Image (cartoon, rainbow, N blue to C red; front, side, top):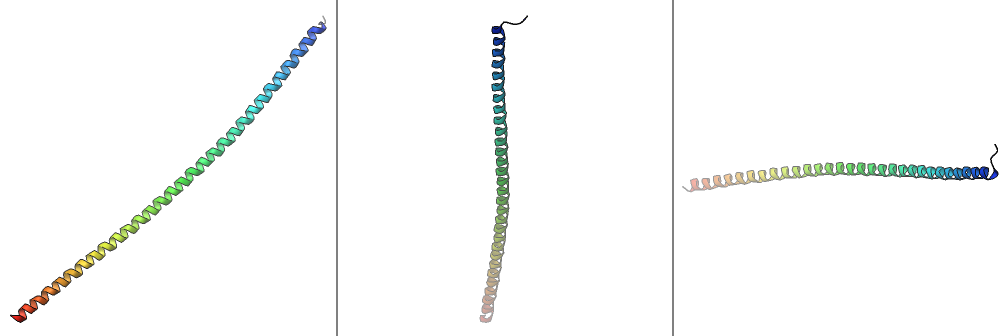
Amino acid sequence: SPQPAYVSSEVESVKSMFAQREESLRRERDDALKSLAERDDADDEIKAEARAAREDAAAARAEAAEAALKAEARVASIDERERAATEKVRRVEAEMRALLQEVAQHKRQSQA
């Protein structure tokens, strides 16, 4: 039984409406997928930057630690030299005192 013209035109109009809706949904999906891909790229970029920043910070910390160790070693070496110098001064002073005492003793003996 052939359909009346208005029914078939109604069917065509519904078909075309669905086709348009489908096309528009497909476009939305494609746009969403594109946005997602862009977001992923941006995420990767940010993660890479963060990783680089962390590596830079770690390198800077390592350098600072190394510099601190060298400075500590320098300070320790200066302290050691100071101690040695102080000790030497003490020794020389003690020897001078001993000599002066000897001289004073000799004077007393030679005067007696």
